[in-house]
Every structure is written in structure tokens, then in C-alpha cells.
Length: 340
Image (cartoon, rainbow, N blue to C red; front, side, top):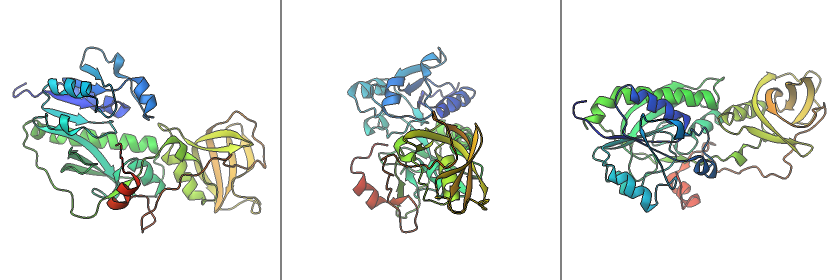
């Protein structure tokens, strides 16, 4: 290839594999920086992909730490003399000591339902479903030392439907990533990309969601609970609750009806009917929820009521509009040491 550039990809998820395959059709990738399964488990990486079996198509380096702050990682990566890097499925900042050694720069993706600089931070697709947002913006941007604060190369907007869940949102976002990279690749490799500053408004940041944050609040309304289950389903760990002290993980549900069919006086969170071994109805505020995909070791019976089993619901701070992306000043007060 004329004007050959040394290209690296940072990533450790299924989305990384998808983009790596797409790039492989257009331009050779010299190096993949990833993490091994142990570090993935330690950092609770959802949708992790183990690249140890990728073969000889690309050189693979397993980092000593997910943050890449170890001197060994920094020395190795800088010694590769990388021109341009794509950061896909790598939920951490890149150290400045690495960024400063890239002749063109590092480019990654971040999206939110309100578009940058609103909705920086973590888990924006999950939060968008929970908040009942209708659109999502995926941005290709150049990395700097901040959190999703770099200049924008290009953007793509897609719809969030009432049937979208964590899996379909990830797939839509991955297709948007692929489109943006392919559209801008030639200019990026020539370092001729046009960069646009993010709008000069106060940024907001979403907090990170952990598996423990997926406890269902049965005192919420029917439609919130259904969105919440969609937001944290596979490839994440799923929403959960407890029956007689036994944990149930729920991956799929749908609003059944706004009518209670005679179960008006049942408490919210009560199983009012067990339809089959694979489906049951729960009374909620506003109607009945049909649960159709779940994992539970116990025996389901009508009249059983979900509880927290002593688990505390995560109390995320809300902004003045009642959403979960909070202004920059508040975010840094809460997260004095941010790991992204």
C-alpha cells in the first residue's frame, strides 16, 4: 500500500473483532492491543472477546493492565512506532505518554442520546434505553487526555425503537462505527481529517453501571421496569430480583396489558400467574409484565412476591431534568478518581 501507515487497534470486545475484520478488508492492521481473560474478569468487561486464537493475521499484545499505565505497556507500545490507532471496545483512557507518540493520533467512538458534549462517560446505550430516549448519536473523535472530550471527525444518528435492547443497540452502534471508519479512513490515514470542536456548553457525564446496579425496583411503573430489563440484558448480566431469598435473573419481558384482569389488589412485584415453565405474569404499577426469558433455580408459584433480599438499590444522582447524565462539576466531585 502506498504511503503505508502503521495501524494499531485497542480493544477486547466483540465489537473490536467486528471492526478488526472490517478494517482488515481495507487496510492491514499491524498490532492489536488487548487484555487476557483474567484481566477481563477482574475489570468486569461485558461482551469480552478472547483474541488468543486469532492466528497470525495480526500481531497481538496482551497488556499488563487495562489502564495501560504500567511502564512495560507504555514502553512496548511506544516502541512499535504506531502512526494511527483505533480504540474500539476499550473502556479506558489512553495515557498521554502513549497518545503523544502516535504520529497521527488515536481515534475512538462515543455516543449518547443528546450528542456530545452531553452524555459523556459510561454506559450511554444502557442509560438511553432506561431514560426512554428515541435517538442515539455515534461520534468518531480524536482522543485527548479527557473523557470523551476530543474533537469530532464525524457523527452518525440512529433510532432507538421500543424493541431495542442492550444487544441490538450494541449492534447498531457497531455498524455506525464501521460506517464512520470506512467513510473517513482515507483522510485519516493521510492525516487530512477535518476536526470539529465539541459545542461550547457545559458537558454532562453518565456514571458507570455495574452488574450490582441491575436490581429491579418493583415500585417503579410497568414501562420503566420493562425498559430497565431491556437495557441490561445480554451481553450484560441481566436484571435481577429475589423470590424467597433465591436470585432470579431476567433477560426478556414485555408489557402484557394495562388491565390487571382481576389482580388489581395484588401488591406490585407479585407473580399473579405462572402461564408455563417459561412465562409468568407480574403485577406492576400500571399493568401486568410478561416475563419470558429468565434463570431461576426454584419453583415458581402464583402469589410469590419479589424482594431485594437485603440488597440496596443503587442511588444514582439525577440532573435537574430528571435524567442520569450530570454536569461536569458534579461528576468530578463524585468521581475524584475516574477510571474510564
